[in-house]
Length: 213
Image 1 (spheres, rainbow, N blue to C red):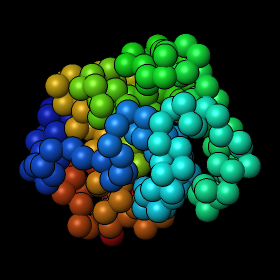
Image 2: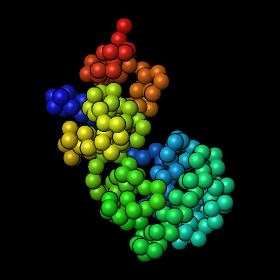
Image 3: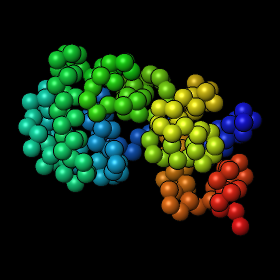
Image 4: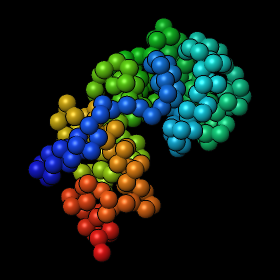
């Protein structure tokens, strides 16, 4: 397994040599945490369509904390689960105002106290805004790719994160999320993976068992 992980890492770096970058548009920790929270169960493209209006109306934590839920719901309606997302956004902003002086906290423990913030969001906020690598953000793409490659058999994102962190060197953790998302979006599709085009197919148990003719 260790030899395969080293080879997987080498091929990822060859395929995606650029610095990891987010497909979400944001310019500060407040915008980042909101955008990531909104991205659940939808695409980054869809989130980027609504955040300009959201941030124009609520440009900072204080203004969002004072928002009416109905007004936020109208802005983010197209994203789905808009009621729960609006509730969490406002609750998150109010807690940041009450407990952290209006500044998005920069520790994992503090971020996890915010409504709607799980480890995926916290990991991304820390890495994208504060240069802190606490773990590997596991979204649906990372979960799917890591399981197809048999890098994890955990049933939850948190368990998958622990498995990946044990396999990849810490200095690579910040890249793993970006690389697996790229692979998941471009090749390792949930329903119709393009296994024949994948640069990892000879190392992939899913390809060996399901895709190879």
